[in-house]
Image (cartoon, helix red, strand yellow):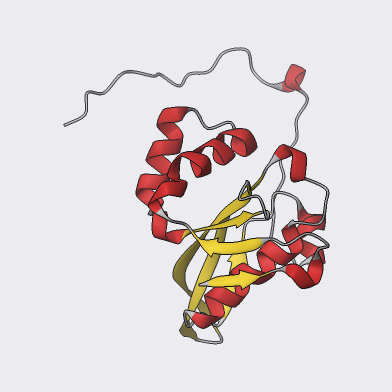
Length: 165
């Protein structure tokens, strides 16, 4: 499926499901956004499945952003409902701050709805961005803080190597 995002931009952008030819560019975007090394990028794309990724390209075909859309279920109102998780939104460094996230997230939500999801969730590492997209904090968050000088210098925890089976 291709969704035009022209209404939100002066330039023409294309939102598409990832194709096998996109894999190297997706891994590069993940490396730029999250510091994935080559091995971690290959592992993440392999485990997630290339079919879960969506891409955003400009008129010249340059990959500006990608994200994964993962089908799941959420417990809501006493019942399990079909849902989707938006994962690893990666926007090219040169495209950040230019308003690309909102139409990307909107298109991901449209895809999730078309695939039967009744709810979409994400882990917002940049809350203001996702609030502009209509997401709000749900559940609870616990933050522990301590001065490093207050932490013990030694611990009684022992570490040892375990050979995989």
